[in-house]
Length: 272
Ligand SMILES: Cc1cc2nc3c(=O)[nH]c(=O)nc-3n(C[C@H](O)[C@H](O)[C@H](O)COP(=O)(O)O)c2cc1C
Image (cartoon, rainbow, N blue to C red; front, side, top):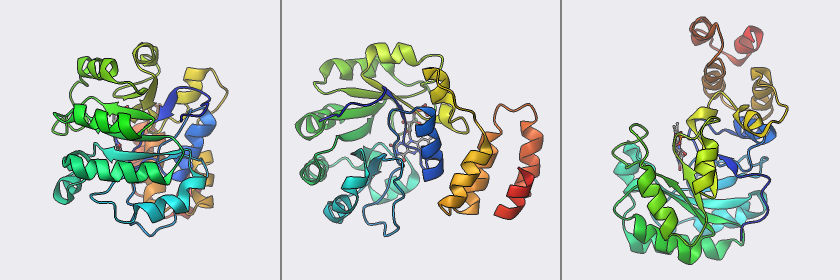
């Protein structure tokens, strides 16, 4: 069952971007829900879930899923299974958009259903198997997230809105739309779909949610930095986010050039 959510605009899952500090800022800025990036249930690292996100997993078998979900179920708002990752490692290992064995997909999603009463989704791309995935989702999930690009397209080219609308018509569960949603066009998508996710437009811009919702929230890298320190995030990640936060600033190129040379958290702190 989908509980009451404060609004229909979510932070899309993004690997390397959606660390705990960034997700907390997006939540504070107003995101109705935040997604973690794809996570292996076999990853022994402790998950940082203070924003109560939807925890997205990827897998090629049911191994480790039950234990992982039991461990974290009380700390999340829901669960999602990734069937859309187009990366080379996904291809090599057969997960994400390369997991095409429907029996395996159903086995995993069925197991996920048995491990939680919280909202469960799968996130898919445009694919010849979409109808089969939709049927599996209708059997076990509360909703489905769609990104209407093929795995070959990756993140470029136009999302196929016609395909997305067709799926929406065929679906008897709510549909979360993902693909080029931003502050200018989100109403157009919310007219047609039940929820939307914002991905790239939120990178370096957690305030996108507050500007859509008319909420007060100011974008300030210092806020990210303090959270990143609190959660002991690696320097590499903090520096990446620092670069992203300069996007749209008048001096952004100069700032990035200077930041590029920074070698430690202390140096970065002095710089900001
Ligand atoms: C850097 C990056 C990392 C991503 N990582 C994930 C991921 O871990 N799991 C997932 O389901 N989708 C992932 N995506 C896809 C996004 O969630 C989203 O569906 C896609 O980018 C389209 O939305 P956008 O146009 O708003 O960015 C990623 C996208 C980007 C750009």
